[in-house]
Length: 507
Image 1 (cartoon, rainbow, N blue to C red):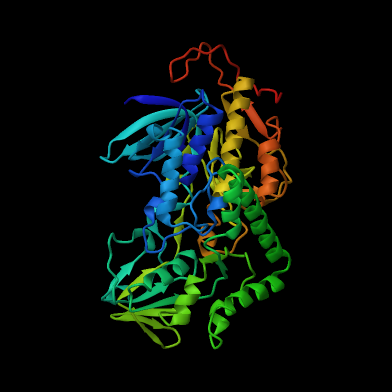
Image 2 (tube, rainbow, N blue to C red):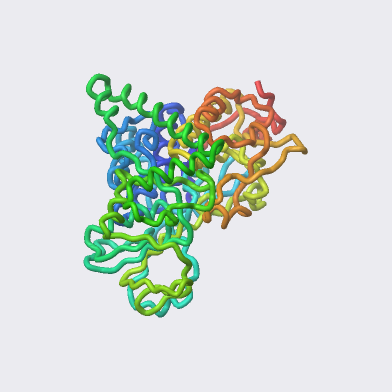
């Protein structure tokens, strides 16, 4: 089989992958690269999810790329708008020709003697092909595209209606006049409930426990004002900086003063609901930001509930019946359609097998280095965004850091760089400090973080900006090497001078 070589391979043509390619093409134009996308479209999450009302749960001034201003009037964007934005970025930076659609990565094996990743990709027709690269960037997100998470519901087979997971919403599905129960209380559920009220007879959000929900404006007067007097780029940067600061301040306030934050969040919700509304449905047992806050643009879910078109029920499911759901309390919810907005199935590296010199890499036995690379794993970066802010903020920082690393490797004449922890006393902590169900289910499968830099993660954009933009690439935790081969030829065919396998000095 042909073994095509690239300096860099990016896995995934979603928001992160296209962003990484844009940074790479601008900052390392001499590097050859390709994006491998298992599906046949750009957009990732924003192309997969097509359920009614699909939208961002972060404002687009921070979810947008740092290098491409968001010019739409809406701050909270629809899925289609985000999809178009990603495609525009790919076209504007000539990224689209570099995408290999229908190439699902099955495995990646690092070979130290050659300093390359050997990549096995499966095409749509089932054929497998081999590729190789020096550096690999995983932009696969953190969940499975093939299946969502759905708990086992007793009596599911008895239900005579339709059961739909939002990740696999049927195209042109008509729910007019139907009684719909949405199981869940997260971002997907609070998006679906008001959107379904346009045609459904009745919509019920069934939750085991409440989530914190906050109303956010769809349009910002300050944005309109700045756009009238400043160039788009300047206005975008000012709003972006302001929104990052507000989000971080809110997060820190919630963490430091949880009781006060709980009171303020609940007061804001109560002010948008009828006076006799039972606030138990919006009174979570956990502290704010132990799980992600759910954004409700212009309070649309509250309006739906105030109008009577939607309702919320807090209870546990006993079993499904032929015409609905029987609850532990003894009540029954009638339904023609049940939507299981119960979460995602979390997985690492797009579920591909990762090996280093024949040994399988086990993520939970490794620590994350600066939230980018992994302990003892050479030449691989993973883009994983913030859980308390917009994903793209961290993605942009990671992509720029990888470009800096590639330049440092070239300057040193190194073809391999591996993070190594030299401290036996380093405490190993959970990678993500959140209680969300999708995180709890995989806590023993995902990497760790350390208790000290550069292994400690900061859910703080400004701290990460200082680390990832300014930190020296001569960090003692980074081990630079080159393969020990005389007259070595890289897979692209060009001769290289004699190289040494010794650890290279960080200078």
